[in-house]
Amino acid sequence: MKKRAVILFNLGGPDSRDAVRPFLFNLFNDPAIINLPNPLRWLIAKLISYKRAPIAKGIYEEIGGKSPILELTQQQAKALEVDINSDPDNEFKVFIVMRYWHPMSTIVMSNVKKYDPDEILLLPLYPHFSSTTSGSSIKDWHEVAKKFDLKKPTKTICCYPTETNLIKAQVELLQKEIKKSNNKSRILFSAHGLPKKIIDKGDPYQTHIEKTATEIANEAGLKNKDWAICYQSRVGPLEWIGPSLDEELKRASYDNVGVIILPIAFVSEHSETLVELDIEYKKIAMDLKIPTYQRVPAVGTNRNFITCLVHLVRNSVAQDMTKSSNTGLRICPLNRSCHSYD
Image (cartoon, rainbow, N blue to C red):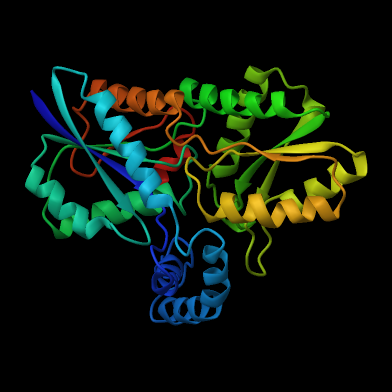
């Protein structure tokens, strides 16, 4: 029987008011977020985290003073571990690594070394690859593994934007919201935005979002005029990919149709869904006199989504390891460009 460690990557979030500022510093000190050399990046991260901390603390106060993302990721990890260990030929242990707050890679790396697996499977909880999310987490893992001299065969599941059970999970939750609506509504697939310059460099994130949205729309039987892709969470002066959610809400108001927001890129509830979508954008919709405003829950521990993760792990186990090493074999069903972000 082979022992395998599954590493679930997620963004992380502050677990208290005092953690907000250091969390923001870790975020903006990531070269994948601000691509400048140190000490300039360190100084900018210090400045941004100092200025944004009071605003961010106010946001987290809306949801109990901290992010729920760790607890929700733990629920996903537990569900995955239970299901994947139904395989009698393999033993799996699931570890959680958060990128910008605890538990981060250094601590988890020690625990993985103690577990001493025969193989490591890296599984980002980001269905859509971006250098700023999955790419950053994967790179950080390999850098820390080198410092810890952890030399184990490693596979990376870099993306899964059209995985069948991911689409089923999204469609199931969407259809529940559609049934609740008494009015004709437009489905808005809202994803976290990115600066346009990152996409222009070849980042496949936007393409992946479009593929997921198209699959959901086709599976749900939506007509082209009934849905749109948009982006949220813009910060800073750079040009971001669009259209923005703000723009789509204005268009819905002009057309006098209700909206159902599906957070297409988020698999866990956190500040971008619980505050941005449920409070801030809902207020904008009310001010615009949009007839109805609904929001589809994140997939969380939806049965289909856990099945999606199980299938991804099992498929990775079945992959030929002859080309793999501790640097990691990439398993990419769609866009090979994600392989350039190491």
